[in-house]
Image (cartoon, rainbow, N blue to C red; front, side):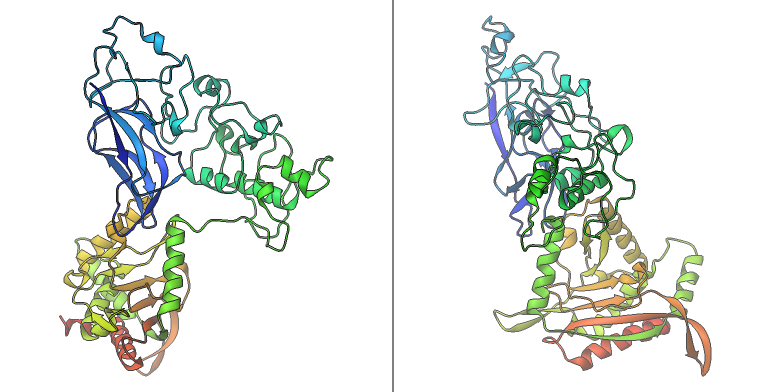
Length: 512
């Protein structure tokens, strides 16, 4: 007897209570093995691929891509076990007798799908059918095929034949306006494009994609939003400009205004998403919800400003000797040593001398907690926003080990595969904003840490060296610190020691 088990969104740790579905990795009717990855979700910490603890056949999925679910909410149902005789055709009834009854064509087992699929009736109250729980159209019987990764979904007549009759019905069609393109999947690859359109009420079926084979790009969605906000519409069949001006820049959108559009209400009835733009006292523009990584950054930085009485001190340092030392280390062979790793090694040595800055404040107990281990965070800018991966036990690693760990975490940040554990538990943060071509900054402390060291770009500047004016490689160092854990003398001593090690790397050897 087949049993339908419900798999719920698990607790992903670190106090996370919800996650957003980014991409389904399985379809209804697919055979899955135990611990097979079935869905990719985004939390406030990272992108996570979730494995299913059951082996069997997926009978239902809960939530479309972009849906936010709380921990414990159903993700999907899986039919496991062996079908009863009356379910596998042993009763003598023809399989076609169940078509249109709401049952789903599925197979059993954790290996390859069987040659003949059997029908399983999902548990009472569970959704059945195609993606996002929509009932399978009568007479189709088989789940819809998923497009190959990296390729646009089919469009035109082929898409209409492959898609359910009611799937993706254009919003304007439901309002009595003829859709711009036929039914079927929309040519969109990026989940970010779908999310941007969904959050701003844009019907992707109304857009003409400017990408290859009509692929809808982010610029097309932003163009539609600007057109809605300014009362201008793109002529039918016209593609969006390749380099559209940024939203909110004030630059006019290109394209004509139809004669029948005489008011903002007319624009709202023709342009998808225009109804969501207010013309009252609120400023116009594209609204981006503070969710996911962006929302987590906003919450943490706001809390830092509210709770931490921070102060900043800075100093210029001659980094010529440090750069020469790095070149000599890399010329000797072996793994390359990054500049960030050398700066991290200097930081851990400085924290050993000034442990007050490797601490946190417990306001409930009114205590300063000085930490024995240095878990060093470093700021990394990615397409998803600012993240701060953490190098565990940085104080116990040499320059080569720090370089390797920085490289691993940086690559994981770029590919969106950082785990929640990679992004939490830091005790001190190193921020190399010099990669953006700027000299200085006043970093915001990464709550609940007590300090952050900022490093600007290293550039040639006139500098007095050994009593003579010379061109040297100069860098600005800035330290933001929690004034509750120490006073300016401690912070100044820490920063001066870091600068001394940058100017004369041999100073570091005396502390090893």
